[in-house]
Amino acid sequence: MKLSSFLFIAFSGSAAAFVPTFNTQRHATSMSMSKGNVSRKNFIATSSAALFTASSMPGSAFALGFGGDFTPTYDDVKALYALGVTLDNLVTKVSSPDTFPAALEGLVLFNKSPNFYIGYARNFISKSVKNNADGDPRMSLIREANGLISSCQQLLEGREGKTGQEASEEAVRRVKKAQSLIAKFLAQSGIEDERIQQFTAAH
Image (cartoon, rainbow, N blue to C red; front, side):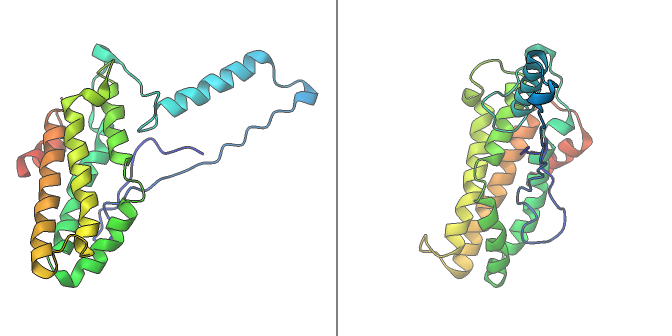
């Protein structure tokens, strides 16, 4: 089962607009040993291809490191960009206690894959930093942003002691802070793209 190379996020106003969506494909490998179709050479080649596929997945332990040969593009960070942009929808939904249920629907789904964006950011950084991508200062930006978004679930559920408008104001603050952290990450990505520049300027 393969995780898609990038995260696709719907830009609609749905409750789950900012939730990670996984596209999976089933790859059935048929090896007929009795017919002699699989040689040791082919098996090694197949295994190597599978390992390469795993290494390109966000959050993989085999994240690729290209060092100075890597030139980042918008496609390398578009999942984080899309998350930042669609958090506008979450800000709208947490702005009123009346729409907390819609916001919570998306937050619950977000928290089912709590480390997706952290892994995605790590994979991006690993392409330019050969060692200790986790120690890169940019990782702390996405970790904090991820935590702020995630924490909004228990906030809106009343588990932090705040309710109504007080909870709403705190949720808005957290989501906007998360957006600013994502913007800072993107600004430090080294990518020159109009979409990135517009988002970072707005946040």
